[in-house]
Image (cartoon, rainbow, N blue to C red; front, side, top):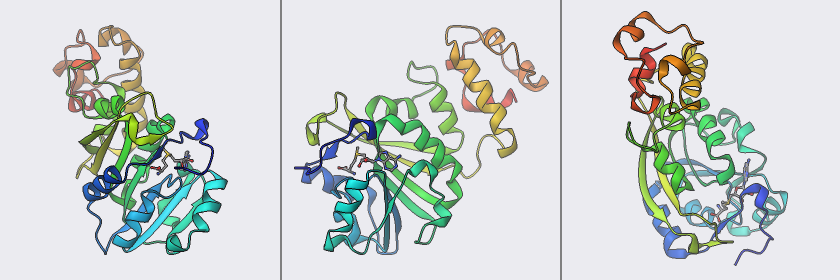
Length: 252
Ligand code: SAM
């Protein structure tokens, strides 16, 4: 049973099922040489299982009540607890060496910002395991042409490979969320599909395309100067969900 009162604004749903916690750790497959960052340790349910199995562990938690509680647990004294917001964290400045493995049962209300933060910090981590709302996990792994395929699938898929690990029911959390959850594994593509210097423009094109899913691209992208090659190769009467990431990249 969690001892603190759960704060909704920080997406606090604590994991309580020991079997599930062990299954998550088995999925991560921690090794003694690993350096790991945990996002949002809460009361330490995952932290206490991971710590004995890895080389170095750091954990960032935004709630000062939880940081105090975690720091007071003698069995967790080897973990570097940081009080702060993960979205402001520079991985290279952590007290443990990089590249890291990242994991966390993350606050669902900031899932997209955390994914974009991971993309930004990608030179400092090797893989990441995140628990998130199942519907978001499905968007990340959606095939082109499906209803779930959208802006997030394209933006994340440009840099990262996403693997759906397994589904988690609401009953294993306190308090219970209203939705199913899922664990996903993220790794980095060897070669991102869009060069760094074109990323901002790519983001704007993809956002504009998906802001009106039912419109043809030639209408939703009317304000953009698209590449000659892209305009020749891609029929702009198509709708955004029919374009692969490579086709979006060709429009740059
Ligand atoms: N890992 C714990 C567990 O599985 O029981 C807690 C998971 S709970 C879904 C998310 C945790 O992330 C909470 O402890 C919350 O306080 C913390 N959190 C929320 N926003 C955060 C942020 N921006 N940076 C770091 N931690 C955050």
